[in-house]
Length: 305
Ligand SMILES: [Zn+2]
Ligand SMILES: [Zn+2]
Image (cartoon, rainbow, N blue to C red; front, side, top):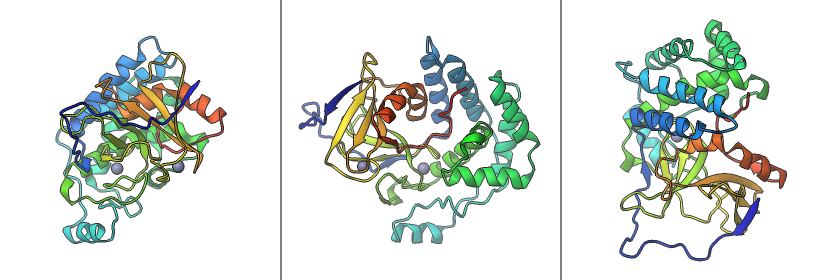
């Protein structure tokens, strides 16, 4: 593992003064289509290839089930306005209740998942979710929205997480990006969730700036570079990577909170995806954890079989 201190200068290409938007709301179709493509690229020759291919089939299902889904129930305009005034995210995860759109999303996802080739542990988990009653599914949904999934039950939560991601991406896509406000360090301004990773982007007009990606709704929000995305500290930030990994994925470690979140170099590799590249760089987690840092990101797909 190599460790470098944060660079003092933050290079921006000459002639480009980046004035990034505060956030980018997801496009629910391209979000999952692009993620599927990225997972398939990452699977080539990868030690986790069978799992990455299974995830790519699952994300393809997330893309395919969206055709003619019912409209999701949005929080009403008053509630969204109040959230904005109080610096809260408009999509309230704690008070979320399943609507017809979410129920249809989960049913369709489970039906397509049954046709996917998957590791035996995942297949057994899918069978359990498929026969689970409403109360059990509700408990799983609550655990995911609270980012506190029991370790021994991660496998079945993968499928509920996939349905929640589709539903929350559809909700977030219906928000007004200009009405969103910062709600705190390491918190998605749309749904209140933690980041899965951050990216230094090469987007036109935002080149060289950094965005955090939400694990749940796929919203990306601007965060200055060389600052801990968990606690906001700007001191004691370092970057660590697996030797020979090419530097596309690094861990941004913080001495203040002893946490880390990965940072992707999207401006160097345009098709990186926060969730996909996080799973594929599990080796980096093992190295950084060995050095005593706590993983601050949430990714319901980051499990091994
Ligand atoms: Zn979010
Ligand atoms: Zn920190």
